Length: 426
Ligand code: SF4
Ligand code: SF4
Image (cartoon, rainbow, N blue to C red):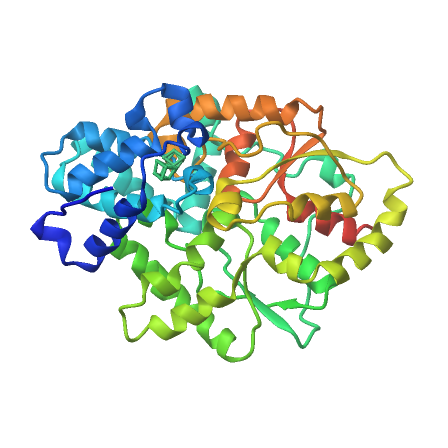
């Protein structure tokens, strides 16, 4: 693609990066069928190629309006287009640059600004989310249906999983080999059992999972709302919190939410120009692993533990599980085909999911900012997941988990809870 970036951006590092990405797109359109918003709306401007064209105009200094912003806002950042693109176009990075520029050039209405600010000031803080959930749960019957569906169901732990085991507790440290977790923000509030379950599984394969009080939100939420300075501040805080443990010999930074894992993997790039952080951030990114990636590195020992633990389970009918692979797992981290064999090795029966590559519509704050498109994607996803008559749905990211819970009567859990339940069965 020919480009002529405007003077105000052409010599900046973001401008040079955007220019290289734009030039790598050959307009072939192979990405279009992979794009959920193009499938729903059938408008080229709601496709990756159309959005690339809009961002090119933006970067070349042509007049922009709320229309450009609308089409960029409608993008889920699912990055399915990147997986489909034969030319390796880094669409997600271009979108970061394009959205930040649109934010500067197109003023948002007051209501939209207030909504985005509120999300940034509440969601990344576990205590604020817990407090808000407490109030919302108390007045649940009074809430409009659209808000009610976003609240976690009262019984967070399903009978299907209770049948397997009691809620996980964080194991006491007992191994010389250690990993350090990013505990996150929304996940400990909405599903506090996920991090202890992760620590339990790692304990079974010989790794102690340390506790880090000062780490928190990975920064992805602010990043995707184009509040880049806020996001960087969160990344720096996590680097400061994790670094002493890395320096003391932790061999991995483990993250149980695939969206957060993808963000931590990017710290090295995001902080590369900051002398105080560049080196430490690069090391932390190099050590960052989604729990599926870390377990793939230890698949042999985990399979041996599961084989022993699953012998008793095989005497009862296996639980049928539908696995939803989050976009961040398959398109950002490029992890596929790792979780399903581990669930099978743990004695679960995987049901077929026909649209495995499709986004569920959660996409960070997308379900709140673009509720109509998000709901259409959610319903299509739930139909696909339920088609194989599963007894339980498993996924790998807290956003998808909460979103799916809002639309199905089936229990929805993080897949690591299933593995933990199998390993620690009484
Ligand atoms: S990130 Fe997802 S929604 Fe956005 S253009 Fe790519 S495929 Fe479409
Ligand atoms: S992003 Fe990739 S697949 Fe899509 S039009 Fe450009 S080169 Fe083709």
